[in-house]
Length: 507
Ligand code: NG6
Ligand code: CA
Image (cartoon, rainbow, N blue to C red; front, side, top):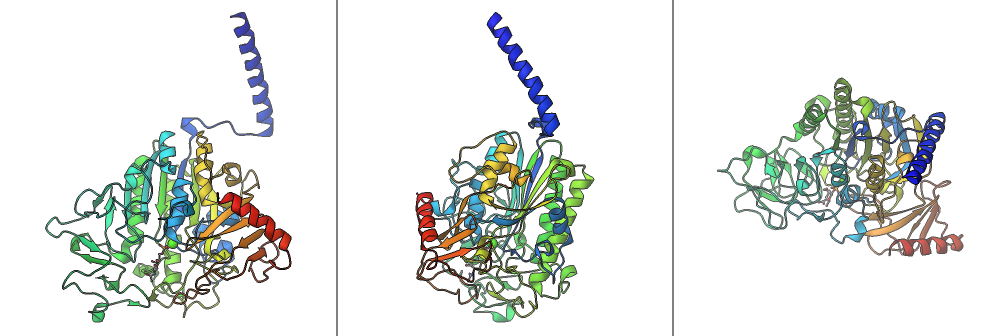
């Protein structure tokens, strides 16, 4: 015991002195349960790097998101893993690169759950650290285990992969079923009017965009010519569930209210809220009070609507006294697209606005605009406002937030960048693999290397460059962020170096 006593004394002295040193350096003490901040991930759908005034847009004004950027860290090299929704969301929630899962592609509305219920997820991890967890908004990671019966409890759902509560749209706003699902139950379903969904064939006698074009209030450009809901033709066929169908123009207000209520009802203990907004994905259906407000047609109008929602949501955090105890992460699941299948004047009314913000490509593209997206962290009173050029990715939230709540997570793909997210370090990733249409490329330091891929060079319906070509491409993003000069031939050494790094990382 003598030995024990003296070692205790030594330890106590060390703690005493290290506390003194830390207070001098103003290192924050480790968080205990009471200090665990609420965590809110606000995730937009198809918002481009150049779509916000805080990212340089001059033709559109997004004051509420700008306020997050002005008071937080605005990342200039913040990435989604992928140039489409499902794989990006998979990486965000699991911390695993989506190209490791061959099914991580844009999913139809009746696809089975993509995340294994045994897999580690961000909400599970936070749940173990004592958090209450919820998703409100777009899911698009599949539901059930094949052949979902929409009229019974839908399982597995977000509730089986770590969310205590879920209030979701199953896939996308343009895919059936066009209903909200709360904790595995279709909201407002009349048992006498059961829902049926089919992605291959129509239900006899049900109107489609082809059979009944006179019913349409929005015209389809490519795809999107199956069932009609609220005058909008969708992807996939649906029958029944009339009372349960959502109102498109009220969707933003609806999710906002749910998010606000969630905060109000869960404020006593730490919560994790994944607020997955549907804008500016197609069909773009602004509430009438935003119609015409951007001068850019519905795509601009719904960006203004989303910005307004975020302002209202922030007001709620403030009113509830939670602003100084809440970390907000703001980002988008992939880059911008104008014509994604409907005639909605996104191209015609664009004017001088550049949703890509000077980058090349867009949604579906391996070029930068596919995956480099707005990325902001905000925590009032904790984060010192800053602009960071560190390479960060949504896949890193798992390890980073794990670290924040004192649950260090061993992960192959997710890196702990918590200090960088808090603006206390400018050290980002050395390497990142990005993905579009199951093709991958390597960002490494200032460089990006895109291997040769067969396939269309331009997504012809949409008009975005895919990044496919028969040659290796190598760009130095520091001097050529617009990816105009392929240096693969000029700099074979660098190319070789990156090819080796890439092969090793893809093991
Ligand atoms: C595409 C759709 C597009 C959009 C996208 C998913 C067609 C022709 N195009 O297949 O409109 O829904 O899938 O977007 O159907 S994402 O942001 O959810 O990945
Ligand atoms: Ca998307």
